[in-house]
Each structure stands twice: as C-alpha cells, then as structure tokens.
Length: 279
Image 1: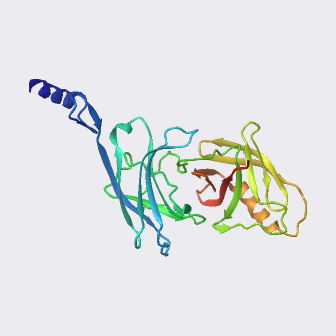
Image 2: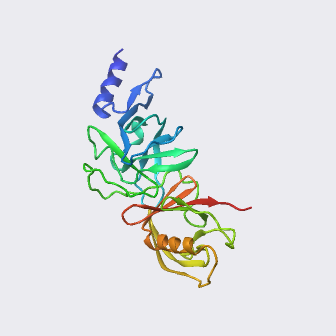
Image 3: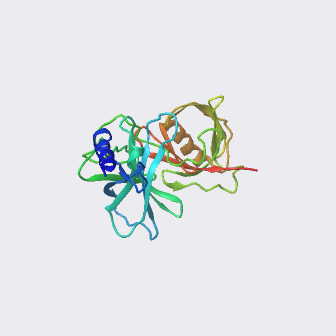
C-alpha cells in the first residue's frame, strides 16, 4: 500500500501524470489518448456527392525538408451540409512542446481529392474554444477565415506521400480543376519529371518538350528558365499554354499518397498530377 502511494506521489510531482495512466502491471505507464474537437466547413454553395469521406489529421510539421508525419487521423463519411464536427484522439506522449504541429482536413470520393485545407493550424498554439478548418475545392481560390492567426509555419504540407517529388513521372490530370484529356492527335500525354541530381525538369507540355530548372525547400517549389521546343501542332497547344503558365506560377507543392498538387504564391491550387510507374 505504501509502495503504491509513493509511486502515485512520484508521478504527480515528477511527471504531472499528463497523458499517461497506471496499468495493472506495477510501474507500467501507457499513453492516454487526448481529444481535439472542432468543425470543418467550406464556403462553396454546393452539396457533396454521397459517399464523400472527410479525413482530419494531426501532423508533425517540424522538419522543413521532409514530408510531415501523421500523428493521428480520423475518417468520417459526410452526411448533409457543413459544418462537420470531428473529434480526433491523439497519443499525448507523441506531442512535444519543442515541435510544431498542424491540423489538416481533406474530402475525397473514391480516392479522388475533392477539397483540401492549405492553411496551417496548430491546435496547441492557435488554441481556440472552437477550432475551425476551412476547405477549398481543388482548383478554387483559398479563403482565409477572419479569426486565423498569422504564423510562420508552412501553410502547405504533404501527408502520407507514397511517391517522391523528384525522379517520379508525374502525369498531368487537371488544371484549375478541369480534367486534361489527351487528344488522339497528340504524340504523348502531358507530364513532368524533376531530376534531383541535376536540379532540372523535363516533360511534355502537350505539343512540345518542356525543360528548365527548379529549387525546392520543404514544400516550397520554384521553377526557373522554363522553355519549350517550338514545334507547331494540330492538337495540344491549349493544354501546353496553360501547362507552361502553371509551371511559371508554381510556388508550393503538396503530395497526398500518389497525387501531386502545385500551388501558386497565394496557395491557390493550380494543377493535379498522378504518379505513374513503368516496368
């Protein structure tokens, strides 16, 4: 009895007993889940299709040059109009005061990204009584809530990236939310590849070969000296013009599993790409 009392008092004075509790095994402490609650909403006046899935994640975004690490995640099938309430349980022993964290939300349908948040929100720093995460449709302008605080955390992050930004064949899927379909008269599909050793890009813009340089730091990405060959084509010229404009405007990127999204300086989604693999 005295031994148990001593262990309890030691926990209170030395650890504060936060985020842990005593198990049946003497001296063993395990993580006690802690909850983050809030709401997710979007401002577009539209209803999402049945089966849309909301995913909210708590991520460690401390390291600038690597993808963020998911600390905890929760999924919820959407029913009705926003806002959508969520409760996210996370292991308290994995949260450290010296690190930076961000809440992120996205809505998908059959693994296709429909909406995403791009503003950093640290629930341990920007702690409000009512946490709100705002979403924007891919290809739509990003709206900033009035109560959002200015901070220096990265506003665009990658979550569960299954493909690398560099040395991956990225097939162009959409520009400004509009799907890009390959014309029968095109010689090949539009794509881009980034060579990490040479810091060079190459690709096909729709009619001509695409080339240039790039610099990357964390989720910041800039292309430079972008040029194309000068062949005239019967098809693909419109795609090419828009594709080159995307490359010139790119300031950030985000990878979600095997999907790449390029953003401009205002964090507006510009284009979507899908990783392709060849035997």
